[in-house]
Structures are given as structure tokens and as C-alpha cells.
Image (cartoon, rainbow, N blue to C red):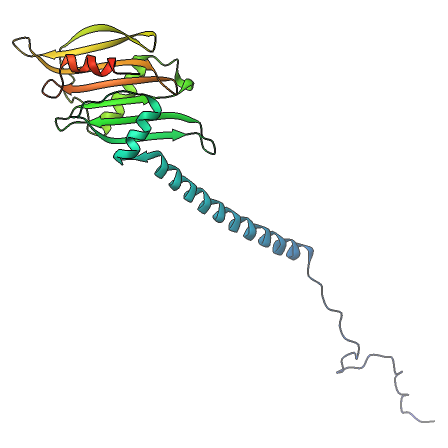
Length: 229
């Protein structure tokens, strides 16, 4: 009898050889797929946000450009939209602001500023019916703050003012203007601050006149108020 062992079966694994069948490929995990999807979504959102920011910036720039102007012709047009009034020749148009509610034609605040070469100013401000209940004092303070930021109006806060009240009939309504008069040592008028509210085309219009007596007299101020139509 032969002592040689019989050959192994054909389907038995052999040392030193790889199985002729290919190893199965590992598929992409669910977590990896989710990360890729989220990356795509966030990328799209980032693009949309950047596009939206660009559009908002462009709209804001256009809005501000339309709201503010120092063009005398446009200033006069804005003034005519608020009020018909005769401004003394010494006071020239300096600028105007016409703030409207975005995406509408409704104006909620307008301001027109005239100034002379002595630091005097005549300001017209309308805040529409939205702020119709605001008192003259509050509106005057808001206006003074805005003017001081622009370097306009009186800088001496310690002036001893003489205060008077004058009544006028404007468009069939009786309105009251407060006259503050700073007088010199001999009683002569040196400076005027006059404020009052009159009915305008878009609602109440606050008028504030702040000027030296060298530029305007009390009679001139009366004439300006009486010229309102």
C-alpha cells in the first residue's frame, strides 16, 4: 500500500493562494451620504444668502440716494410737496430728506432745510399722520438735535430768552407760534428762535426759524408765517 496522501479536494482552500472569487465592495455608509447632502444644501444656502445680501445692499443704496438730496431744484420740489410758503431770499436751499416706507409711496418723514451765511436756518418738518400726536416741544427737540449734529442753530445754551406767543390763522385754522427772542444790553433783538405747527399737504408741518437779527427781523418772520397757503 502506498504511503502518499491523496490530493486535497478541488474546493478546499490552499495555503499561499487567494480565492479566485473577488471580495465584495463596501458601499458608502449612510452617514457619509448624509454629510455630502448636507454640504450641498449648506452650499446652496450660502450662495442664496450672499445674493440676498447683495440685493439688499443695492436697494438700501438706492433708497438712501433717493431720500437725501442737496440739489436746490429737488429741495424746492420737496418743499412744495409739504407746504406753500415764501422763504426770504437770504435763506438758500441746503438739503432735504424724504423718508418713505420701503416698497410703498407713503412718506413717513420729510424735512427741508434753508440756511443763510450767518448760521441761521429755516426748517420745515413733516412726520405725517403717524406722528400727528407728537407735541411741538418734542418735535422741536428732535429737530434741534438733528440740526446740532449738522453744526446748525445756536450753540449757546445759556441764552436768556424773552418768550412770546403769537396766533395766526392758517388755512382757516388758528395756530400758535412761540417766539424766543434774545435781546442785547439795550433791549435790541439779537437772535430769534420761532417754532410752531401748521396744517400741511401731508399732515402737520413743524416750522422752526433760528436766525440772528442781522439776517431777519421779527416782522420778516411774521410775514413768512402769514405767507403760508
